Length: 285
Image (spheres, one colour):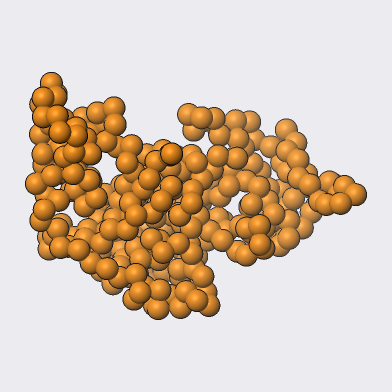
């Protein structure tokens, strides 16, 4: 069936959380997704810890490697003891059992928020079909930030209906594992920073208009290759040798495949070839 994710925003101090089922990662990680616009809405109002939590964290004793209390609390917003062990309390791993009990005990303490309708109205979703990419997504845990306008410019693409779409950075940066590879399964734009997937899981985030003092700005891009190619082709065109251009600089778009382990293959350029019926794109190494 595949891994199901939950979008979780949680305030540890007030024990308040907002959790939405977000389906499979590659089905619901986009700027027009209800789970995404709800998280963006919350972060534009105040800081929250954020987790895009997957169900697979409960298998193969993954929680044995989790030492962060903030991450365990994030898991408690959408998981319970039985997600890890069912009715069996005789696991031989005490540290695993103790963490699962910690999750179960804290699950009972959360007060739940529902901001779906407010978030939809805030972003005027019926007309925009997107969150706002202005200001900065800041990480108060790590004193880092991402310029949202820069992120969108590098990451947006055209879907099959010709609409501009973006893989949102919050699901990728805060996921518990395995989702990003599915969204980027067909390969990536060489500008992509796929190595950042999951790096901000459970961290305290906020969206602000101005960059806080002494916060470092990191480059961030998550773009699937063929959708991004279509966008660049229609927006920037081709060079004299029919290679797709990446931006107004005239440089060629570079791409790469990803292995099942997330390792990049050789970089390539993308060439456009006009057939009798359509324009097709081919990698050239």
